Amino acid sequence: MPKLVDAQTRRTELAEAVWRIVMRDGLEQASVRNVAREAGLSMGSLRHFFTTQSELLGFALRLVGERIEERIRAVDTTGDQRAVVRSMIDEMLPLDRPRRGECEVWLAFTARAVVEPTMADLRKEIDKSLADAFTTMIRRLADAGALRPGLDQKVEAERLYALVDGVILHALLRPGRTSNATAKATVGAHLDEIAPAATNER
Picture 1: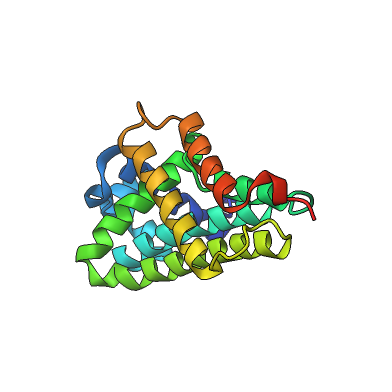
Picture 2 (picture 1 turned 120 degrees about the horizontal axis):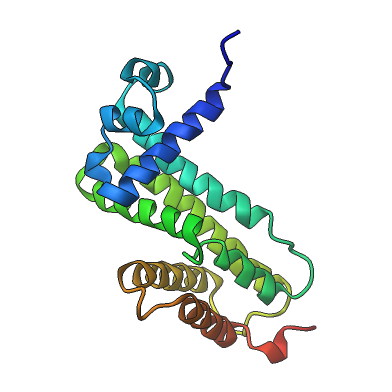
């Protein structure tokens, strides 16, 4: 009997083939033909799962966001909420090859979305999900009595998002200067500022 492959599994494999091409050769090389070759499929087989390149690329980008969100949801949320927030942010940083790959793919797609309107809506959708995650992180600190009094939660969510975005960008573009330790220390210093250790416990 021929081996049956779950459609979602195959779609995920194709998305991961897109990621490998993007990381190795750049987003412009992620054509249907190249992705099919990377995944070991014919173009006809690929089109059984994705009818257009835009659909394929859109799924590949959305999967990046889903993987990050899954890891954040898996973080143990008990105990010191500043430690919880730090762990959530660690899941976004390029601290190992899989997470670095996700960040590289996200950066490539974000740059493409600036000039390709068909990708802009999807980028905005994922951006909103990430922004919501930072809003939830700040709310966690506030609800636990850890957030420094007088801070505007909305502003702090935006600041934290911008900081993490910047750390990711620096880690990707100048890894010699922004090591894993530096990236984590930078985030930690900011959390120390907005949620001082002395106020972490009620």
